[in-house]
Length: 97
Image 1 (cartoon, one colour):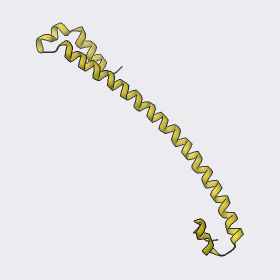
Image 2 (spheres, helix red, strand yellow):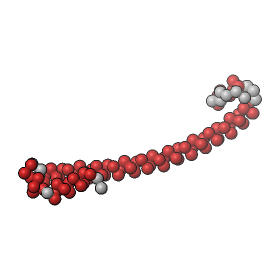
Image 3 (tube, one colour):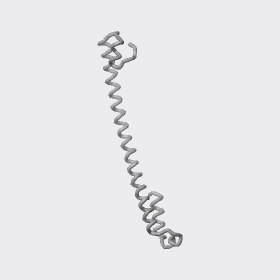
Image 4 (cartoon, one colour):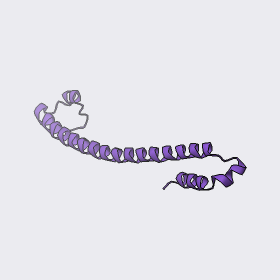
């Protein structure tokens, strides 16, 4: 439980005594609202973090597949075009044979 919720409960439990120092129900309600929004926003952020982890793993898998396919294609292009490295540039290949 968030510190905000605990504070609000304490204020509400002692509202009569705290009224002498200017703490009223309106302020307690405002504090409760902020505490609720804090918890809600924190939950949303945690869900977003989890989604980022999932998407990062998905992205890494796609990158690995792309590297594998590019490597395979690069080898075939080099064999198919022979030693003419000038043609390799059209395929984005800059490495030597």
